[in-house]
Length: 225
Image (cartoon, rainbow, N blue to C red; front, side):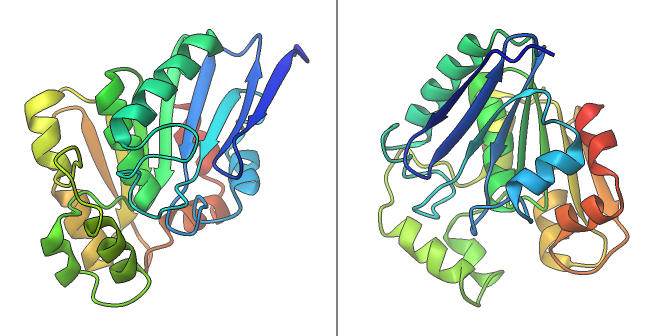
């Protein structure tokens, strides 16, 4: 494997490693805690992607990336333009958007905005408008929603299924959620009917489906498919 690589950091927001001989570029999006359901390096190691070009983003605003990222731009559209540039620089022929929880929403959204690659989302929230507060009455999710809505503008994208129906109904993706956690099931099932999005109900309890799949040794199969 070539050792030619470039690593970038923009504060704690972006971590990137590009490998000259990597045909696949993984874009990872952190959730509310800035992780992928576990330490992101451990997630990537378990997924077998350390030998691939990769970029990891976290949203310090905890606003589902709607408020953009410091040093990159002020909304999701600016972040999409940044990612488009990074994909071009990577030289990769295959792109995967991967995220957990809030990051799962981002993986699906940015895959749609860029109209390229495939999304892999673990327990994503797909409906994040004001009505979603009824689904998440406790902290810290309710606080994150309130903070996002306090900065609401016309460029925010809250209803992911509606966005996909209008812009990219052909989007390709895999969605994994707990088979026994009603909130995550509702978010996942909101994507039912898109012909190229497969919804997988994992036999487990709770929200931590990415952590469960890592413990089961299934991440490598999922991310390399």
